[in-house]
Length: 638
Image (tube, rainbow, N blue to C red; front, side, top):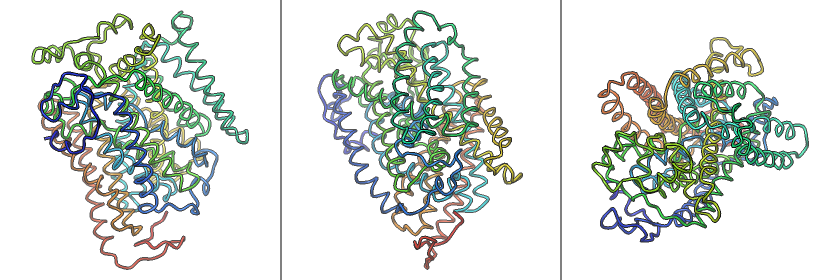
């Protein structure tokens, strides 16, 4: 079914370098050159930004440069800070680009290369980038407040309260899932941990320069990049010689405590001192690594060795226990569309937008960049031999069962990597290790790089950890905002963002909630529930923002948000039903089943309230003018 659904959309040019696993039409796409995919993806994203992004900005949102943004109107030097759009792009991209665009596409490779590639391109352009843009816009028009507050004002207070609990619940699961992926990558990896640690003092130095030196962004950028490069090079040597290895060789428990502590500190300190400059600095590392990977593909020109479609389209796979439809939509997650982005887009980012027109560059542009990251992660995984991929990502018993059914999925190059890296790579599930091996596989084929396999593998692990932590710090700060808003309804003093005890108390409570799950949980129990709740939140955000667009008299243009929102509602509830009733309950995973049902029930309440509001707004025939002279169907407190 999936093959028929997307066959007319495939435009990639193949190279017949790999023996066809699939018959008929799809056999022509087996073994396509990865460079073809990179070029096609860049063309799709560039055209999307130039045409569809500008269409959404001008026709759907009608961004206005003359409207005063919250960063200017409520400037406090702490949370509301007008920020250079390039620095803000770096912060926003770093905050939204966590484990999802790296791990999700790698896990989805179980279904073959084509399902993941098509969903990333289509979902990112028409869904994820639009989602990110409209939620930033909605928050900017509502004083930089949270999605729950927007729902309260645009729909009704009850729906706002339900949305608040849903978002808080989902955010706790999200940060726990992301942090557990980070724990898996950094424990007993001294060099990776050392690099992640030194980004913090470097970021503080950059923050001070950008804060107190006029036009200091360039100086801070150059100094930060130099110090980061110095740390990467010297850190590798120091860890190899065991000079500092003993200091950074932390076990899982230690890393599980350190990450929440970092999240607490980043949440309490002024946004300009640590969070923004660290995210800005890590963006150079993230984008730089992706560019390196792109150049590696240009020079090496590897072929896509994973089949276009594997035998697991209808379920029964060793990596993901579910059919390609609908599980491809919740597995890819942040690489195409993500509800976690709504939390960032209604948290830190709208409080730093200096001009409404910058929402296109920051919101739509950052999501397209993340989509390209997802494509590169998918390529890195799919240039490995299929047997190597499944040997890493499947549990040992599951892989042996797979091998018995499909002998052609035997390992090929994995013993070579195990010998040179020095660790057993079999059964390292979760996607992070296979991505690191895939990146090392590409880099080792560059001239004079073959002997640096271990170096590239550890570099890739560090790269993944930096990706994740920049979402953890921003997510913790946004969670603190949510908790302050909710407690403020009972004790109004918590609404005062300058009240230090309130900031510390809410930061500590929220950090403890997700930190406890990190310390006591495991990735296999948290991540599936994160995927479900994350995509439900994306659907919720699009539906709430569609309500606002209808109120702003956007008419048929509101469909730009409504269509992807309704689509995500359908496919995510479909996946949720299958998870709860065909996986969790049959396996006696009662807690996971209950949590999944709670998330879905909360979202049903929000969606029902929003649809009722849609009907009410569509029956309003006469418009009124807001303070800027724009005709709207109703006025709300912004």
